[in-house]
Structure formats: C-alpha cells, structure tokens
Image 1 (cartoon, rainbow, N blue to C red):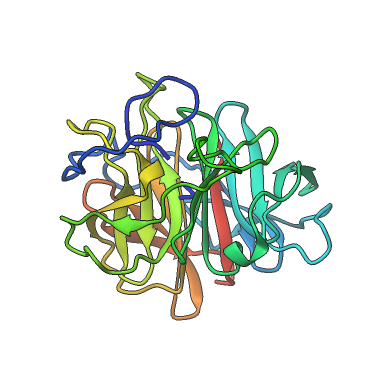
Image 2 (cartoon, helix red, strand yellow; image 1 turned 60 degrees about the vertical axis):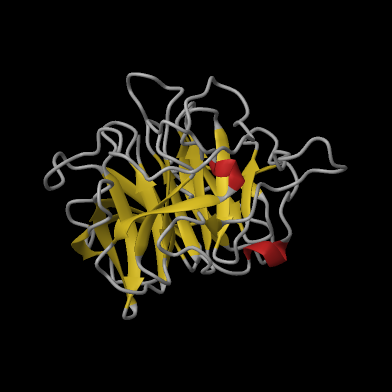
Length: 299
C-alpha cells in the first residue's frame, strides 16, 4: 500500500502527464477521525532486511519477525507496499529491482530487471501503489519522482516523445506554496483509496527536513487538477514533530487512516497522521525502536 500518485480524477490506465495551475489543497477524502479504531495489522521492513508484523494498536509487541530471503546479493529493501488490485506485497530494492514478497514466509521473487539506477536510491526513498491506475510511485529526498510498472518492474515513461524512458517531473514546491524555492526532502509517499469511485485518489507525501505533510499534485477534489507526475508539491501542514531522520508512510485502503513510522532521536515510532492538517499523534515505539525502511498496512 503511501510511497510516496495521482490526485486527479482518472480512468484506470496510465496517469495523466498533464499539469495545469496548482490550487490550494481542499479537504482530504474521507480521512479516518478520532483515535485508531479496530486493530489493524502492519508489515514493516527493517534496515537489516527483516520483515516484521505488528498490531498498530500495540506496535511495541511484534507478532512476527522473519529475515527476507531470495534477494539479490548486497540488496537492501528501501520500501514496501501492498498492491490493492491484487492484495500482493511488493518491495523495492536498493539496486532498483522490484520484488514480490510472501508475507507469511518473507520469501521474495524478483520482478523484471532494475529500472532505476542504484545511485538514485542511495538516500531515503518513498514507495507506494497508486490504486487508481495500479502503478508504483517512487520518490526520494534528492527529488526523484518516478513510476514503475508492477508486472514488469519497468519505468513508466513520462515523455514518450523523447528517446528512452523518462522519469516524471522532479519534485519541487509549487511557486505559490509557503516553501516555494526550497529544496524538498520527500522521503515517503502514500495514496488514499476512494471506495465510491476507484478512479479517484490523492497522493500524499512527507518532507522529513521540515516535518511537513504534503500533497504531490492536487487533491482529488481540486477544481484545477494537477497530476503528481509533474512533481508539484503543496503543503498541507506540520506534523508537529520537527525535522525527522526518516519516515515510512501508508494509508489504509478501507478507511484512509494514515500511519507512519517516524524515526527521531534514534528510535522508530508508529504515528497516526491526520490528512486534514498533517498533525501526527504517537501510538508507540515499533519493536525495540530499530530503523524501519518501509511500512504497509495489511488490506
């Protein structure tokens, strides 16, 4: 299931390349309100390539811990998410290779060949499925903005008129945004899921340097839609955490409840994110607080 990608109404198919003038974000699509309700299961991958399973209501008590197997030599997983269309868990490796992961055994299976250069993934990475078009959004703190095809692992071409496959537009704050002109440090992405209209979704993102919740492109109800493929970032609001070492982010496909693994002061804490204003509310430390590279809410 945030990376961190379309915030515009669209039919199932490749995301629109189009731009259009950015607008100030409106209300989020049906975000969960109040404290977390029914227990939900979250999978996370650690910096040591372990797949862990936990109850979001009590993240300090791990339900399972398994070492990932089947990875290419030297590979480190940098993000995970569930593919809503098929209920399968995917992972992205540090070499740019895509994997399918069996959450019961932690066994991985490679999908195609690496589509992104390893150097592009050497920093912090956001990885999430767009449920409206069944494509993967990949973003990095260096400004990379790209899409991958989940069946082939190939890069989705932003500009077919140019030779080769092009990544999407680099991440940049909208000229009218409060942080216009500043270099973004987007490290996490996550998409909403519209139960009433599966063609609609909003791409949220988190800037770790500023501790901000953003949208990449406009929200799905924007009067003038802007595609996340353009890389345009709009500020929603502060998390209330200050700068962060790292963040992993996901949004539940059932009720759009947003959860994030936030690393600060040497420990990883599970937090709930309010998609209306960005406010983060701590739930508890994840296991022993070791570094987390990605989280995925079980569908």
